[in-house]
Length: 365
Image (cartoon, rainbow, N blue to C red; front, side, top):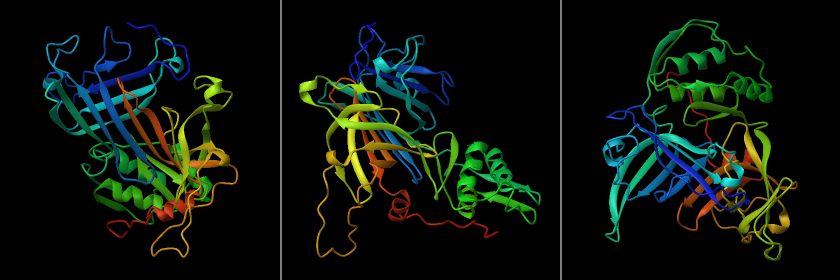
């Protein structure tokens, strides 16, 4: 086992665990590869995409030469986990940020959609795992049942979540806070009569959110809601470029000198790349990051504007951007180990530009 690095942004930490849904190792967590393995861990490439306001988050994991027997079992990886529904948990970061005996922060927890196998340059065999978050909670879910009159909206959401074929978690504190930000009191908008539910629970939950002017989306386990009037949460990262003469990347107070390349002004706000930072993820409320204007490459403006062209949004006056998109990309034996962030200067404008539309109750009731 290698000695843990205590140098910031040096010494990668990662852990890939798969929990089979069926087969000989059903419900038995299998640690496929981790930085603590000795003498040598399997090579893993990964790409993880999280998008606010999007129905599905995606991830792809490429595992090289996983032909051996899984420790503690009599099965190889190909025999144990090659099916839809298996759970994939992946954490990544840097060793200096992981407590002794702890695990790296989780940046993906979702289910396998499908897998493929191939050979790279004949020599290396690869298992490619494609994952989708919330497929089991949305397109593969079903609800039927009747709720009596006078039920509050949270009671409705709770009933929908608990009576779905694949149960959905809902945080009441999150619901109450989102409604408070929208100016809607607890217990408002009660059902005037009994209501029967039959069909996809996703449509009913989306309709409840729309009634309260809330944005909603799923992660791997729960339904998230956030106010469109005040949908911003805490600042989770402040970034600046590394000055070559000052040595390796460091953190000074709340500032991480870990920017890779130059941030770019976009039609939504700004996009940039930093050394992998698991603190930047899509959450409810939506988190924020800080990048100062002098580091951002401003986008040119065409004049006259082209048809259907969106001009770049002005940079945020306070240098704060709401995180609406995150992409993690890495190679445990290669150079990539990055977090790519899409930040919105004005999240309400971003919602409109991303095509947000209110969905109606499928039963129109």
